[in-house]
Length: 296
Image 1 (cartoon, one colour):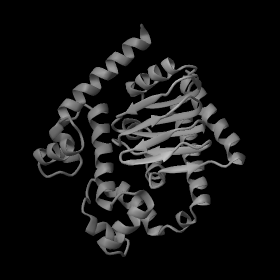
Image 2: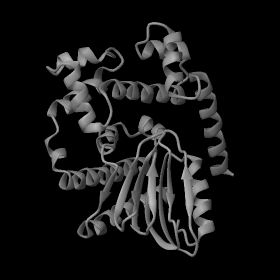
Image 3: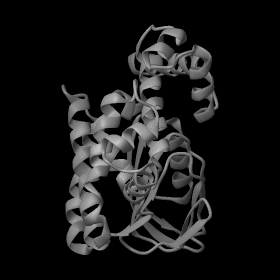
């Protein structure tokens, strides 16, 4: 999809709120007036690469200037908006990845995403822009196709794209090259044992760190504490089980290692505006609406 006017850019903003699991948008618009696009997307990772343009991009309470080639990274639930401030040519790419996609297909992307979120913005060198354009184009084409193994290809292109982001971040921010290797060890243990082990102290002991040290290296690597990363992983699995299985909420609670279903319900509601049952019902409605539109 190509945006060619202010009106189409506004329509695109609305389209991006439909929450397809993965979306890629190319935009190229000569704007004859100021454009302000507010976003309030929940449970979505956003990457916006502005190859051309001027104005500002705000995430929560941090505002940065738009510079040609600058890429912005937005964590789920962050409020962000773009303001061109004047007429300009706006060109670039937007990538959105819904948390439900990670629950379904992208567990291998979690580490790359959270590692990248410590970088709020990244200036892409000219020599790297052509390569990124190619990867964005390949991902965009694959998302529009109906070929066999589409999900596998999309996941692979996402992994390549996020790896390129990480390489570029490390090249421009040298300290990222020297992250403690025990962070990776913690992530591996957490993904393996999160159902049985939920306390930070146990993981810290297994990687020979104090809880304070573990939280420090997690914050350095991902912008999140160890506790936040553990909770996020549990929520991913909860969403997967609610959406893709017929297990009852009680059964899911025990599957995830909660001693009481009420504890799981409180946990889920703390990170979502819905209870587990409400989330399941809404997911079912969204699925049937999407399936009906495809086959009609």
